[in-house]
Amino acid sequence: MHGLQCDQLCRVRPLMTRESIIIGTRGSQLALWQANWVKAALLNHHPGLAVQLTIIKTRGDKILDVPLAKVGGKGLFVKEIEEALLEGRIDLAVHSMKDMPAEIPQGLCIGAIPEREEPRDVLITRSGLPLERLPQGARVGTSSLRRAAQLLNGRPDIAIVPLRGNLDTRLKKLETESLDAIVLAAAGVRRLGLSDRITQTLDETVMLPAVGQGALCIETRTDDPRVAAVVGVLDDFPTRQVVLGERAFLNRLEGGCQVPIAGHGHIVAGKFSLTGLVCEVDGTRQIKQTHSGAPDQSEQIGVALAETLLAMGAGEILERLNEHAQSS
Image (cartoon, rainbow, N blue to C red):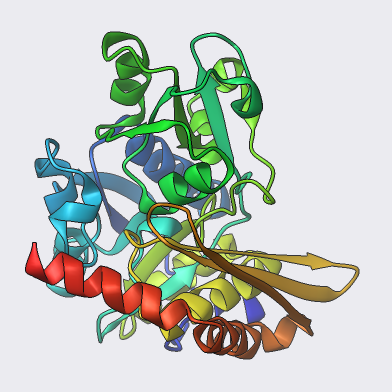
């Protein structure tokens, strides 16, 4: 039963034969890869299942000429899909976990979190040089405040260039916009078979990942035991413990995916360890700490870590950023 836990508990009953499932997903190459991976995994466990995909365009997909931090709002890449799920137009949704807001709408839950892919970020450069050897004033593309702040903390001389679009588009912009480098999530690059493009996998001491990065979120309705039974087999319990700890940290900080917050956990030798970070946007100040404990206490550890960072001054940074966002 561990593998079928939800943020809000989903009830379960055995799968009936000739069931059909509609998966909601974004239409990007990576989103479709992820949705098709879930489809294949479900068919592997339930050979008699009929599965189809429905592509739903989100607000984040429609606004491509503005940096994400300036678009504002939570759930830029999930809201419209969640609405379709709540309305019953789809049976489950497949998201990148790092796109999920800290709070999930009433009536929905995380039905499964499959085993996590590589959570770190990668640097892709035109020259083949790693971050520390990029020339002074190098132009590095990213629209993530988290990535930009950490890059500037280590390399205050570089120039951050806003970079939007799907993974293919961003790789093309490395050439067309005369960028020296771009930063992407390793998971997406690896899932699309582009590992040969990676110049450097950034160590967590240089670039702490986003909460949930590398993990998939299979979102379901809390009152749909039929679908809970179908997707529950894909849940990886250790991944769930780690990711829910990270999300508890994010939730206590009241952060969305477009704020300079990072958090990444591990379970090693039966011990859960979570490192969290809040940055000034310009990288001049980083507040970072690690808490550890039992894996079944991951969510409590996440909240405690957030409280520690708030006591160290993280709240002032986040409040100032929110005020700036509301006034702009």
